[in-house]
Length: 522
Image 1: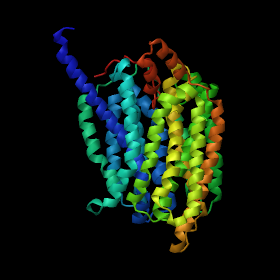
Image 2 (image 1 turned 30 degrees about the vertical axis):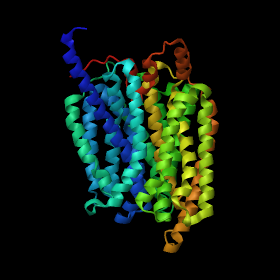
Image 3 (image 1 turned 30 degrees about the horizontal axis):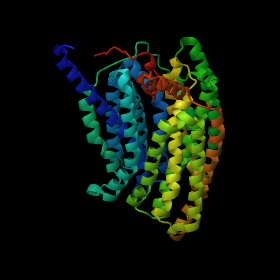
Image 4 (image 1 turned 135 degrees about the vertical axis):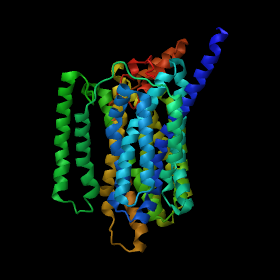
């Protein structure tokens, strides 16, 4: 190598690693924002006097807006430039965070959370796409390993950071710093992103399907809004009609997508993917797993802080063993267990998580309001191990039999489905949790009522995990990526690009799998 190229190569190398730090920080900010809010929900409820329905929408609204915009956000990046959409997304996310932090009432907070979710849907899909076009195939394995570590760090630090910021009551702002902390991070990301991220587009980007986005969003709203408000309004007739009508909207959506496919080949959802048995089963698993997570994490927070009267910090620290167990089990499942045992690992994860929930139900009933954080550690660790065995290898298993040319579309649909499931689970909290709580109960009865409602909700989650375990039989016994990887490792011929390719398509619906040499656009 000549010395003439050394300086430009070094400068280029430094720029791309700075670009990586920028997009990973944005991904971290989004992940933390999801987990940080749960721990502050009781403080928001007390400060604003928010209704139970508003509490659900503060979390479900974000998930719904995020899910509805994910695929379109990825496609917009492919068409107009990933850097451009990333900068627009991070700007909007930062602005929405400021609106959340300065919200005057519950309605403004819910609206700001919807905006936050919509702008995150523009920002997040660009992260993996930018990594994909910035780093060569032989480096992506290391880069995606770093990305996984960031996700694990976000899962651990989010609840704890939220607890600290709420507990400290900085400048008398109570819960508001959990949103305002995004402002300096977002502004720095915007300034540095303009300088260091290289623009890129997909050479054959698909067209937008705005009608498809409108139909799927309408269908979800018609289903989730009556669920969240139904209890407060005494389950009016229009709510039942709305939920029934959502099925008609989804049927119209499917018919329209078929027509869109025949017309120009650029539907929002590639319906042919559902002909692949393992993919259809995997989508069902993602949806139901999202429902289980949506129910558990909200009722868990309400149980600890309102039912048991714990401080945000005490509740946040209680969740640390769970987060650590998820991260540890996730790494072990992908690296060691799934290559050897295949889908049995995921099914063991569902059973393990259910066992942890049953243990939690038993402890909550035995100790009542006198339960201590250390007594929760065992069921939380068991649950965390079970969740870790599922979340990390599930995408790999779902994509196993998907044609390579559709891997980007399939990855985007997987993540969208999980977010939709999360929003639906949060909506169901009004049925499985708040449905058994009397608004007019005496203060002395709150602890017992919330404890009973918590145990009842966990039984619902156990039932959902039973469904997940059964559906997992339709997944491939052993994901092809791991079969191919094991064979290549034996012969010493494994290429990092094979491991990195499925991940590169995550969260986007463009042509990322087909454009590793995307030409910089500016």
